[in-house]
Image (cartoon, rainbow, N blue to C red; front, side, top):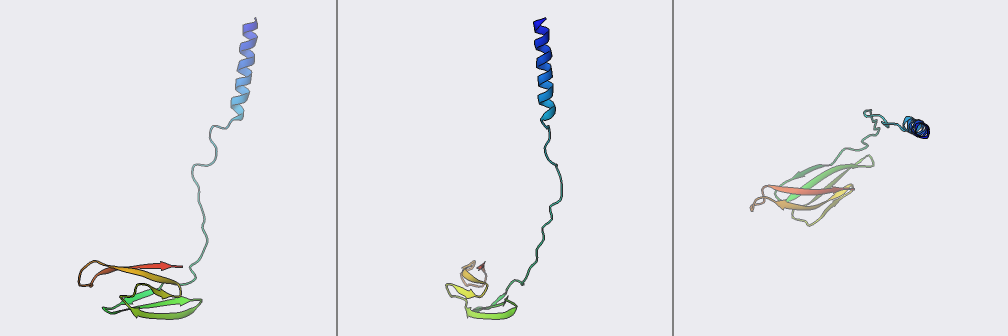
Length: 101
């Protein structure tokens, strides 16, 4: 008789414990809404063999910067050119690194 009572009590406790634990928590799908705006366009960068010309909008005003293309660092109001890696020895094709602030 004691074994029967023990089995019933164990089964009752197990049932109560398992019914209060959720097997799945949270949704597996949904939608995330992100709200924001772009307040100024990016800069336009044009270069020639000798110079780089940068046009930007900064606080609603257009700014222009012209500098020698071989400068080590070209600063403009919204960022800076940190360097140019030339792909050919005659410097006709390169990658310009620009860091925006």
